[in-house]
Every structure is written in structure tokens, then in C-alpha cells.
Image 1 (cartoon, helix red, strand yellow):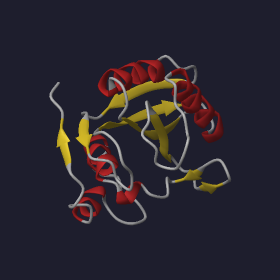
Image 2 (cartoon, helix red, strand yellow):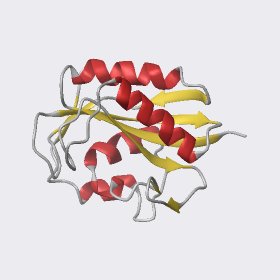
Image 3 (tube, rainbow, N blue to C red):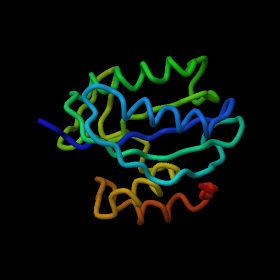
Amino acid sequence: MSARAWIGLGANLGDARETIEQALKALGETRGIQSLIIAPLYGSDPVDAQGPTFVNTVAQIHTTLAPLALLDALQAIEQAYGRERPFRNAPRTLDLDLLLYEGVEMETPRLTLPHPRMHERAFVLRPLSELTPDLVLKQGSPQTLLEQCSDQKLWPLPL
């Protein structure tokens, strides 16, 4: 059985754009991920953090992996790109967040679904709304929620 899931990707250390592109390739080659649709890339200033500008996007996948198995796969990709977690919201070589997993709500020490802060992040909401315009979160539509994040600077990156 296959489910849709959405993954937020971000990086702001090293060649962030190249890292995101390589991580998307790795996602597409991951066993249990059957398809991958990618939103455009955006630049964004850090939110609740310090450091360089981020490169962000969201990918929609179809997967046979259960949520925690998918999280394991995402963390393995992060580790392959040198992800370190010295402190909360530290600059990062790669960040892969499982945002939504179709039909699943859960809260465990390792994973909360839907992602608890995605409705507050323009760098998630804009690409998410482009991938799935009819999607509605508990807090509202991504388009409406974007208005509440109007103070967060976000810009499209050229192809």
C-alpha cells in the first residue's frame, strides 16, 4: 500500500543548493519511495535562528514506508551530508523534515505528524501550496496561513 507524504528540505551551510539537489536525487533513489514531485526552490532568511540564507523546497512523495521508517531514511540522508545537531535551530548542511503523512496523526518522542510548526513557516507553506493547492491543514489553507507569515522574507530562486 502506498501513501502520500510531504518532506520539507532546507540547507544553509556549504553549497546549499547543490546539497538540496543531491538530497532530492537520494530521495528519489530510496527504496520504498515510488515517486517524487518537487516544488520550486526558495531562498529564505533563518526563522528563530542565526546564520546564512537558506535554500528550501518541499517534495511530495508516494511511499510504502511507514512514517518512522521514512523518518529513518530521511535521517540517513541527512547524515550522509554531514548533518550535525549541536543546538536547536543551528545552521545545517541539510535538514529533511517529514511534514505530513497521508492519514496519519501521531506524537512520539521521535516524530510528530503533522509537523508542529509547519503552519508558521513561509518557506514550507509557499512550496507546499504550489505542490498541493487544495491541501487544508488543521490551522487553515496554506495560502491563508502564508498571510500570517508575511514578515518572513522568502524569494524564488532561478532555475
